Length: 136
Image (cartoon, rainbow, N blue to C red; front, side, top):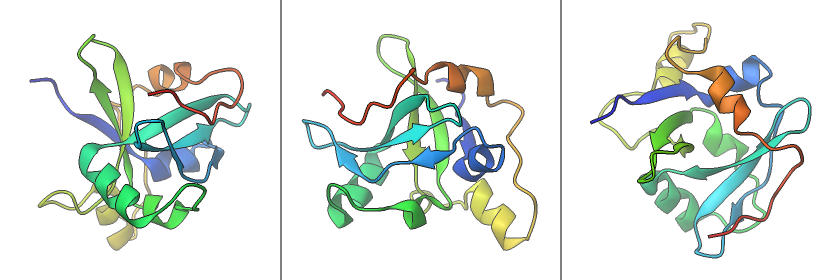
């Protein structure tokens, strides 16, 4: 079993790694995603984890603004069956534990990017121009 590596989305916004987040979109199979942009307009579509997909897909539609849902979200690094690194959005409330972002906010502490989250790997997966339409 591989180690779970994640970082609060808020830390990526604070560090200006992420400068913009699109409205909600769904791919051809109905999976919800948002497109995140870097300050130099490179884009990456980020999908929600399984439980988060159910929450978002069940409560929001195409083109809805979901920023408020993302306030305490984490970006989780995963590996697919082909061994490729992918990133998913994980919403709070899917666990018996509070997320790091929830705890930092509750205690009024600064949010920092965890040392084990490879920021350069994350940013390297962004493409040259925004791509809102995702394939299955």
